[in-house]
Image 1 (cartoon, rainbow, N blue to C red):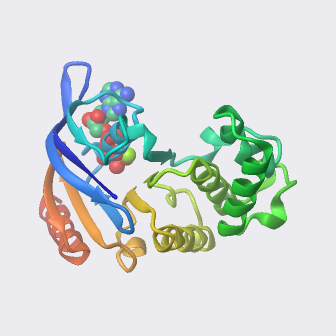
Image 2 (image 1 turned 45 degrees about the horizontal axis):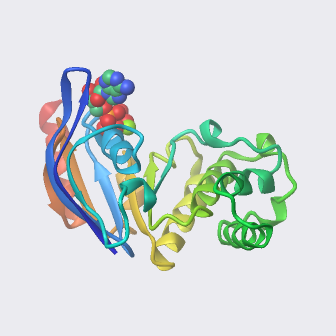
Amino acid sequence: MEFYLKNLSVYHGKKRVINNVSTYFETGKITMIIGPNGSGKSTILKALSGLVDFYGKVSLPDGYNDIAEITGYVFQNPETQIIGSTVWEDVIFGLENIGLSKEEMDKRGNYVLGLLELSNLRDFDPYYLSGGQKQRLAIASILALEPEFLLLDEVTAMLDKNGKREVLNAIVRLKEMGKGVILATHELDLFLPVVDRCIYISGGNIVFDGEPIDGVNMYRQMVVSEL
Ligand SMILES: Nc1ncnc2c1ncn2[C@@H]1O[C@H](COP(=O)(O)OP(=O)(O)OP(=O)(O)O)[C@@H](O)[C@H]1O
Ligand SMILES: [Mg+2]
């Protein structure tokens, strides 16, 4: 599955923070969005999830009317989206909201907890989970809603080495199951080995789109030349 953006612009007040961006995204690929603080990475992800309004045209696959139907956004800080008093409750919360049958909720809940290696923590209070476990729970809860694309905003930034590794493995598994992953990050070395494509944005414009190693090198040269 693919979708296309044509002249996507986002304003915060009168300020345009994304400038006529045109690109596409496809499932089965991990795309990394890099760029300096304030360049617009989170804003693009939020526009793609329907969390912020945008101008421009989005071409969706047949049968879809709204970009939010095919995307799910995961926040940097998992605390912002954990609501259940157990891991299980948290995972099925969003499913109850869309009115699924108990059988369907059980099926999806068990599946995503297995996939994110959280099955043994099912009855655990999310408050006491490690950072990596919390972040995997946040991803599991969004994944249960079955989006085609996961939008991951700095999801490893608050984690230690083990937590980063756990979440990185989970992201690779998402790709292997055919999901599209679009992630914003400053952790270039962590993600470089697993991503398929790199989009580098600066000042709300795409300045590079292509091979991850080339994008990362270009970004690093830019950062050094600006010091
Ligand atoms: N809610 C908001 N109201 C006003 N301006 C905002 C808002 N959110 C973001 N901005 C502005 O939009 C621009 C892009 O911000 P954004 O958060 O998308 O950057 P980013 O690339 O994700 O940065 P970082 O690497 O720090 O996460 C910045 O100039 C920022 O100040
Ligand atoms: Mg950001």
